[in-house]
Length: 67
Image (cartoon, rainbow, N blue to C red; front, side, top):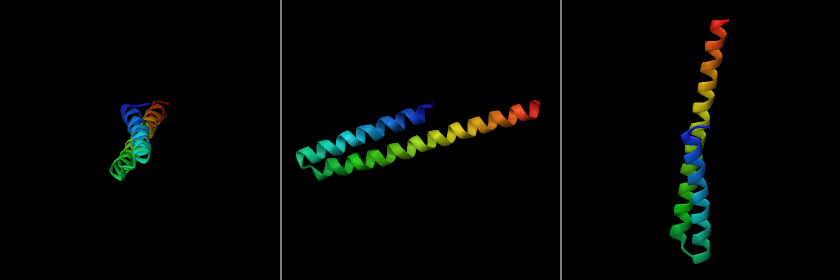
């Protein structure tokens, strides 16, 4: 797990909390900000996933070359 995965998951969770807070208070602005943060968090988390896959693939290639 890398920092993008962790930060993305945290931002997604924070956005969910913010959206729900907006619903409870009737603030469409807070709901929209929460949805925006969720989307940004998911993108960052997927970027982290991609980085992990590239790292794993690079390691696999290095291992294959050594053999």
